[in-house]
Length: 270
Image (tube, rainbow, N blue to C red):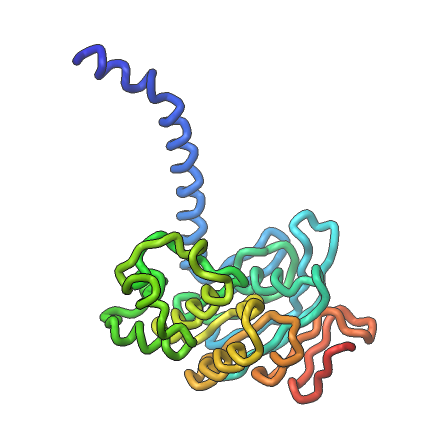
């Protein structure tokens, strides 16, 4: 017994080293979150983020992480509550990078970003995050509301055209590898059901309907509009213009690095 006790560290040294490295990374992430809680962050090259009642970008110049390329310069726009913005442009022009900057994840550049409290916002990527757990836990994520009932969950599933999902999967308590058993279109509709259940004030969508047909896409955006949610979308489909108030084109044909137009005046390039 003494020999076994004294042998724990030598025999587990590799596991302990890996554990220590993981703890160090978690510690760095924790410190970053504490910095974000101050709600005022100065990026390495001058991007300033601080709280505001809605989204406002002023004089934003964004570079790639290695500073080899400038994606756009002096970008400015303001998104008042209940307004919506569509971000379009060619691949690699900085559409998703703009969302990362708004989220405080990309700081290489200069300018000012004013944004609401991120506890009131929900970010939807093109491939939704599927956590390990039950179907109920999938839909309750990120758990910003208490007392979400199974009736609420089933109602949300019905509104996003997944009314038979719980029955097909064996109930809300079923545990599966959801990223494997659900198609990407089903995952994207499930992500919209999370919006209906968590009721955020702001939603950021990065091609969040790319795997859906036009009919389902229209229904989901109409749900957003009915909830009086302010949202920013990244997308390529011309049909998306109909669900937004303004369009930000990061690769216009007039030689500038960006152009902001009312949705009714914007036309996709043929």
